[in-house]
Length: 410
Image (tube, rainbow, N blue to C red):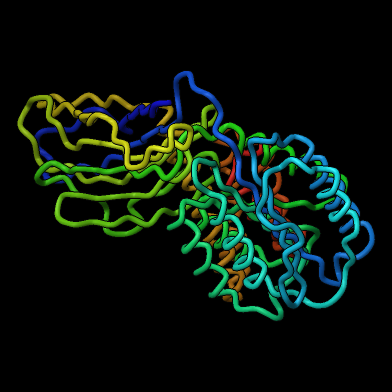
């Protein structure tokens, strides 16, 4: 399995007479080529607090059992349950005795409070014990606030997990979970944030997540950027992922070198990263403004720190400047704008600036329309209208807004 890398600039030309030209560099990364599927190391971390009683827990049991049926004897499985404390329901083991594992799931009862970070810690420990030569993924599901835990600790644990090459995705069930916390955990853990609004959606969402896990070909990918003299990254939020979901990515810079962790690379769905660059004054010519290289692990052959060739990023400086705009990069810029506009709207609403929140939600809706993301545009405009009429956004509305900002809902 190899890394598929494609890059494009928002505008492949710059005028020679300009000291600094801002350009966005879009980098698409995927796993490509033939190769066997690496086995999966999966851990469920399931909220079994009192509020999960009845239909929620019944539905989660069904969804988890359906997913387990798709596992093979090459895979490994572990299950953690948590309320105000964590419990190991299934220790990390080969996914062979599936009927016994499903019986344990079926016997789960709901009681107690919620301590997400205790469940997460236990899940990471179980997942780490079976990670060698496997794609290791943790699915954290909760329906409530972390009332007996520490949110900062939960996010810190997600960062620790990434250091072990473990990926964490979060699932919020119902309307009373904290989208800020679950988003932060998923973003830090290199996974996705998911919203199960209605119980009947659980099986489908679990299934889509498992399909995504199965499509992972390479793991622990880092994008290494070597900038030419004079070229620099923007000072504020210079790098973001815009697909399959939008995430602000941390970057480590030292001189002309910058490193960004990308995480898992999938075969069916590329990760698209957008870099905000400033290009110095150039004489009329084609110039290399950056070189890109990816390091990664290949779990099938248990090889770590593999490297691609270096890919040169070229730009043409013109005396008679004619723009060469890339439509795909423009779409990526709009995806990031939609996310950031929605974030600003949420911040303004929290600060009591209802009018400012309405304006930013409307801007985000218009951006979604430009992208052709009509579902997101509808969600964002409807919520702007709710605020405009003097009403409050429901918890469901708030969560729909967050999901609409991060993903394309078409």
